[in-house]
Image (tube, rainbow over all chains, first blue to last red; front, top):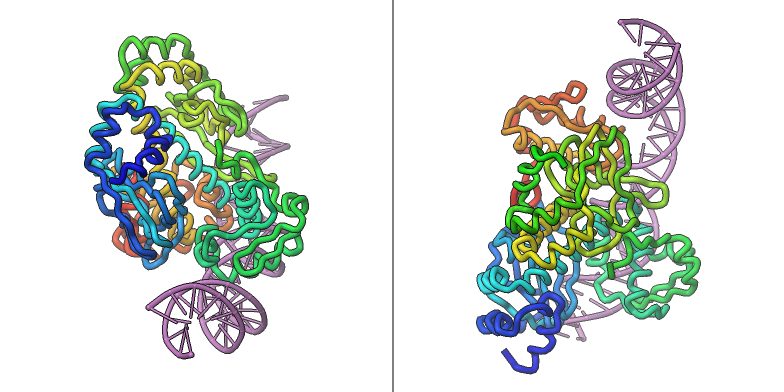
Length: 232
Length: 232
DNA sequence: CGCTATGTTGATCCATATCAATAAGTGTGG
DNA sequence: CCACACTTATTGATATGGATCAACATAGCG
């Protein structure tokens, strides 16, 4: 564990309220590992041995059933993933793979559970983290059940725009294939959906998105605080 | 608050690790309320004033967007709902209405947050509860994205069978209309799906389900521990 | 530079939604 | 307790969003 990496980890919301001594305990057994792209880090159904913290790169969480596969989420630095499985000492519900060169901090799950049992500040941070995760999935569920794929795409793009500090030109930071899977559609359908959104003030060239007419796009997408606001 | 109701509340997992004194503090400001059927208890977008605990009856959690509506979950006694919003002091993401005469314990959210801040056992119970909620929604998301509506119905029925202690004859404890919405389909489609499942060993008369051939149904549904096991 | 995976476009198919008409429940008030 | 009204459930006909299949273009990578 390189000393210069510690502050970033320490600053994570999930570790913010933790006692200094217990934080030491946590990272004592932890270690960084670098992975090339397209490496499966965790596999659904396996027990949680490590809490993963993505420090650099990008990780896709996905799930399989009967030969089908779907992208559930993308993890960006710096954030932890599969916290719930670690705390519950349960098996992973999702698999995770790198989509680019990534650096991950691996904290033995047993240490996480031990510190969780001892450190009251940490327990409260975990609550916040899990409440956030839960509410995010609920929003995503509403998105899936209440909207058509075209509406989901339009709202997704508006959320990306907000993340990109409201600039009207930004990059899809994802292969279209994965974006399609994330949005619950096929690549072909996504391709056509992008064309369809030209009617609502959108342009796309490769992975470069340009929102020509934000008002028109919003008018079509009808974003909702209760679905699209990922800050609460 | 009637004394005879307390033990059931106290026994809830979410209150199990709480200090006696703090439990008192929690229920001091709490009160029971009885509602007829079809009453909206909470509304999405509103701030969380009370943690709700359903003691008797049944409550449907649902969500709206642009005139559309979908059933997200059904709450059965005895369990709390909208815990995440209460802890985070955030607005509700779902609305809730009674679907039959129900009795609900209302605990002021402010008390819940105060006790959460003071009581370490409670903080840990909340973690368990939220981790459970999170994993349940993730499973439900996988169900939605990886399966067709027919497969979702078949697996739903197998889960109900497990809940009914593996008896092959049981009641749908829900209107078909709501079941359809919960499963992400229309009532018409559900009606046809039930008929289709006759090929796979299922019979239904009104709300009475009979699984004639559990093996055939499982063979079709292909239930998965990582989607359908609601105990972990 | 060429192989392989991704993306696009067109044609077609299918699952599911929508529309419409009954039928069957269910709750309410007389 | 019955009758009416209203909601829910079923069934059929049709429409459509989205999937699948296929061919080709493009781009990223070794």
